[in-house]
Length: 239
Ligand SMILES: [Ca+2]
Ligand SMILES: [Ca+2]
Image (cartoon, rainbow, N blue to C red; front, side, top):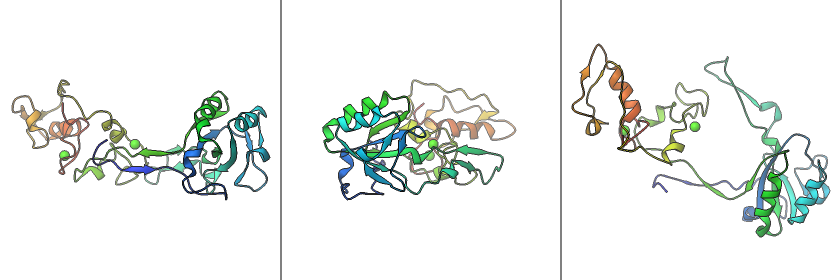
């Protein structure tokens, strides 16, 4: 784990029923169903599995067989009309948001049966995903002073980014690798000037710039040292 990483509890503690205690997430699976698979009692956000109508009916038997007791709407405040998001900067751009109203927390009396239930649920074509509730880890983010402006790397809707997550998922990739010295990058542009962010990894002194600093700028995007508390973070920090 990177030192800058932050543990994120993704346990979903809202919409609780009396049986769902604050530490009950290790008894839960989080499951997303297709439309019209789960029919809760009218107006209910949480109900006994035995009181819920499932389509197909065999789904209820599968749940009860694995000691599932309670099913709860995971995002009770989600409005199904909010599935299309419009960019504020580029109004012609739209993004589709997942139907969070189809995601449920399912509480099992016996947590040892969570794996079995997950596997059985995944066999249903109308189950989009199912996984154990628990803890997760945020992707590593470098401490470079201008990283927050690099929406192409990690877009939170900041600066000119506008559309959250319209990016290359760089933090997620850096969790896997931060580059390798055996990879050589060639920049075909108008020359490269040495720079403190990559000078120690530049072949020779660099050919120098012609007409403009575009080649140096591109090199920085590709290979600026990341997590050194200055400037930007390039895609690779070791190549
Ligand atoms: Ca992203
Ligand atoms: Ca840097």
